[in-house]
Amino acid sequence: MAMSLRAAWSSLLWMRSAATCKQLPLQNGAVYHACHKSTYSVLPEDYNCKVELAVTSDLKTIVCYHPSLEIPYEHTKPIPRPDPVNNKEENLDQVLKSRLNEKELKNSRGPTIEELSKMFYTTKHRWYPVGQYHRRRKNPNPPKDR
Image 1 (cartoon, helix red, strand yellow):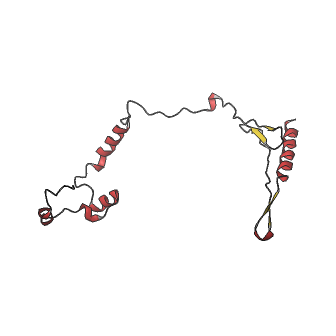
Image 2 (image 1 turned 180 degrees about the vertical axis):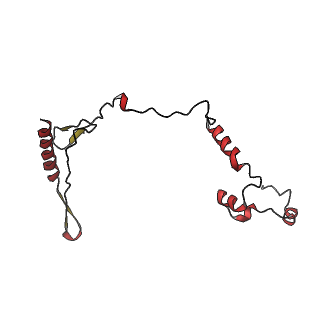
Image 3 (image 1 turned 180 degrees about the horizontal axis):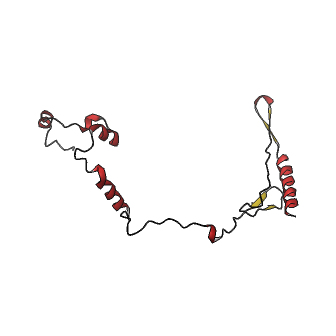
């Protein structure tokens, strides 16, 4: 009975989709034919879904209801959870601190000028020290704007 019902719905789907051919006018009197054909295939019997088809009262919309079936508990796996005793990283602050304590902070020289310019999207000149000549010429008390 289910296979004959599916076959009936399949023919109805094809008839409805074949009837949706439209002619759209283009420039210079040309006509564009737009046909929307749907495809339908029968689902296998061991598929994890119950499919029910229906048509609205105006016969313009086909509704498909396919809830997933219940999965037996024996076929499930538990969600892996971290061990609270051996897991050092509990929140974001601890994650950041543990990663910074590894090899990044052990490098005593720090990032290079090229790395700094790439990190902050600046030119390399921003990171070179300013010479004594330029520091002396800078006015320590600039005039206030009005």
